[in-house]
Every structure is written in C-alpha cells, then in structure tokens.
Image 1 (cartoon, rainbow, N blue to C red):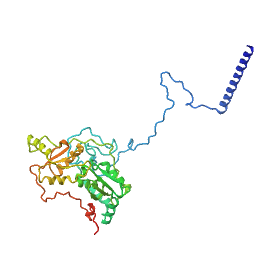
Image 2 (tube, rainbow, N blue to C red):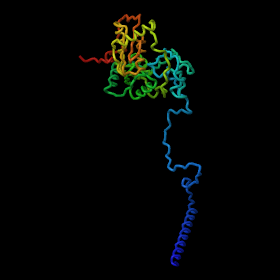
Image 3 (cartoon, rainbow, N blue to C red):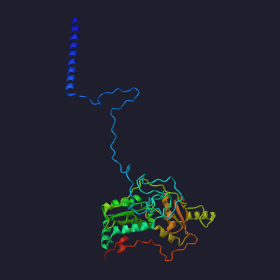
Image 4 (tube, rainbow, N blue to C red):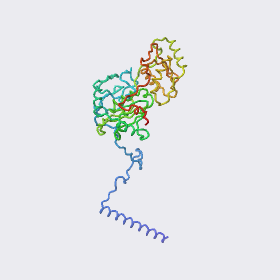
Length: 394
C-alpha cells in the first residue's frame, strides 16, 4: 500500500508542475504578443428566456439594384412623344367613350414614374391633370408627329434601295421579327421596335389574329407612333423602315407599362331587342341566323383581312350571315363582331354557341362602285413587288 500511495503522490506532483508550466507559458505569450481573441470566439452567456442562436446562418443572396426602383428619382419626361399613351393603339379608339371603370384607376407605369396622369383609358399628352375618362386629342399633336416623322425619314427611298431592304429582311434570310398578336400595337411594342432598329435599318412585323381585319389601321398606327415608314406589306407581314436620319443614340425614351390596365366598361354590343324589331321578331331572327350555313370558319390566330369583303359579298344574296368561331376565345370573336359592325357596316344579332351572326338591316345599300375587294396600300414604284407578287423574268 505504501508503494501505491507513493506512485499517486508522484503523479499528482508531476501534473501540478505541468499545469504551472503551461500557465506560465500562456502568460508570457499574452504579455509579449498581447493576443486578444475575437468576439465571435468568446462564448457569451445566453439567457434562459432568449431563443438559442443558430451558429450556421446563411448569408442573404446578393440582389443587384433594380431599374424599377425609382426612390429619390424624378419622373420620366415624355415631351418627345407627342401622342396619348394607350395600352393598345390599334384595338382602342379615342372616339369610343366608356361608361365607367371596373376597378379604381391606377397607373400601369407604376407610381411616380411618369409625368403624365392616367385617366383609366390613356395618359394624355396635353393635360396631365385631366380626371375624366374622355380624352380629346389636340390637333397640333398630329402636326408635331408629322414634322418629326418627315425629319427622321429624310429623302424617300429609291426603287433599288427599297428592293434591297425588302430582300434583306425576308423570312428566309433573317429570323429577327416582332409578333403583333391579339392586343394589336401595344405601347411596350414601340420600345421593342426601337431595340430592333439599333442593329438594322428595318424590322419585319408579323401580324396575327383580330388586328389583321384592318391592316390599313395597323400600318397607319405604326407610322404614326414609331415615326417609321412601311415599305412592304403582304398578307400579315410588314417591313417597317426606320428612316435615313434615324440615330439610335437619340431614340425617344419610351416609359414601359409594368402592368396591363383593366379594360373599362363599354356599352353592350348586343341588346335585348334589335332596333326596329319587336321581341318576337328578334328571337326568330336569332334562331334563323344560327341555322344559316356558315360563311367561313375562322382559325385561331389566323389572318382575317378577307372577312370584311366576304361579308359584303354575302349580303348581296342573303340578309343573315353566320361565321363559325369555334375554338376562339370569347373576347376575340366579340372584337371581330365589333369590327364587322363598324367596317361592313352591319347589325350584330348574336354571339351564342361560338358563332357570329350579323344582319344587313332593312335599308342596306351596296356600294355604288361595286368594288368589295380589300383596299391595298399603294407604294410609289414597283407595286407588284411590294404586294408580294414578284415579277418573273420573261
């Protein structure tokens, strides 16, 4: 037992000597190098009521500053664009007056981004403080747009220059193009066209759906809002030339719409009774209209410029015309019926069962010249080439 006690005494003494040695060495290091551990390494006493901290918390991802955040910036000036800002320039008209709004009006450009006020239908260029839904365009704005367009276009293109541009932007030679769909020429599409004009003198535009019923309106609105020139049109394909004096660095600043505005409330297209007829006669006419053989069946996102002359021709032999719109969305064939009412003109009877039934009316008179073909846009020279009929060498 004495031997065991001696060994224990020796081990305890050696352990105390080692501890004294390490403590003295640590004190010498601390005195010579003045080392202080960082606060992250020193354990802190946590309260019992506080939740435990997670040691491995991930850092938030880096987010670059957004161009949509305009805090502290001034609104964009729109003086260089002398026209009223609308969501669609081809599918909306300042002549049609809405009767109200579905929801409270808000600016689709975002808060404090534009120096114009949104009326619920458009952002007028004349009076930014207008509060009514009606917006009457100032006649001076059209003169300003015409002067600016003439200044950018410069000298008209020659026949050879136009041929070269048309052949350069054919579908087989370039895939760059702009799609114009059911909403027609929208405001944000103006910015897309100017982006294409950075790299090329012209841009090809492919039109589909409801707007193709009035290709003249599309061409005039494109020239009016972009200050360009339509140099080619065949079917639903257009080529828009930017102009000789166009400078990409001096392009107009077009504010973008961040949201699609709500459509206002318009008067009903089809009323309970047709004007000049009784309730019984209206019901009988709707039944007869749905039983009439369909004049044509419309394809989805097709080319509809042939529809107006077809309806005019059909009215020479029958008073009711039915158009099959199976597969189309309801708002699309409602827009088609509205365009037929204004362009033919005719009276809308019903939209039931995805059909459009129109009536020519009691006092229908065909045009005196008897020409029902679609009016083709006239070009200066080589009209056959720019209508899509290239002459074959003989």
